[in-house]
Image (tube, rainbow, N blue to C red; front, side, top):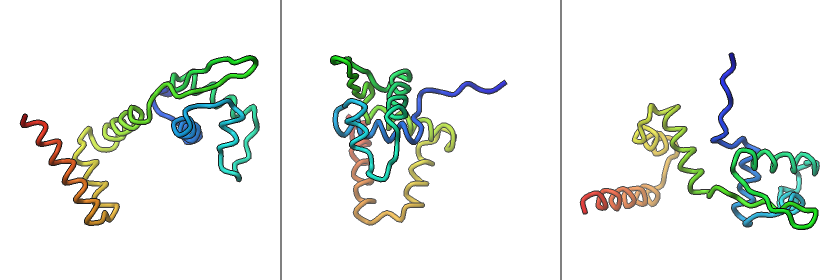
Length: 131
């Protein structure tokens, strides 16, 4: 028996639409389509279906104005980022956040400036725990 697909994470195209909603605060199907990359060839019905699926998954809400539905994000980008990182940490890093951060640091050839930013973030977090 196939495992049921989770609705906690976004597909690539859903993430593309959510990013537009997060950036612009919402919009109708036509407004969202107008914000897609120029080379993105997507039918109106396909865009409407994607937004309807996002609503069914609980990522967006819609409000009817006349004959038109306006969609807005019901989940913040920050909350989704946390959800996604928890999922990646659990599935690929045995629920060990340090392993996830180590992979990020090791594989991305971070600049001294970026490493200092990470050090400062960790310092602040460690300082919060001592209070």
